[in-house]
Structure formats: C-alpha cells, structure tokens
Length: 70
Image (cartoon, rainbow, N blue to C red):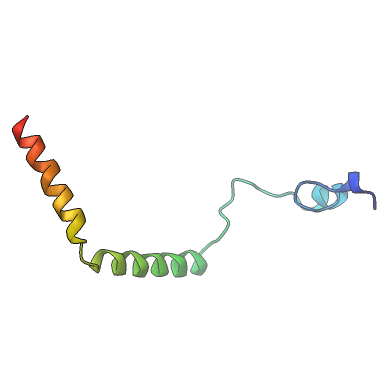
C-alpha cells in the first residue's frame, strides 16, 4: 500500500468506502455517556465543595464596592 492510499483516519480508501463513518453520530452512547456524566458530576461537586480562597473573596468584595460607588 502506498502512502497516498491512506485517508485522514488511517484507513485505506477501499476501507472508507466499505464502512462509511458518520461524523454526526455521537462518539459514545448509552452506558458510556452515563458513566462519563457521573464522573464529571462527581468532579464538579468536589470542586464546588472547596472553599473560596480569601484572596479571591477580598477581590470580589473590592469589585462589589467599586460597583456600589458608581
């Protein structure tokens, strides 16, 4: 097989014709999506449970004070 016979996905042109790829189809379905969603939710929940750093709170309070003066 020559280098020019490969498509972007590494398959030969003949393979691409035999098994078309639906680029609009979701990459994962059913149980995989649910598992990913659970893992992402757990990560985000953990991040939300973290305290806001004092330095950031001070900055937010300063910005709120500037807004009230305007």
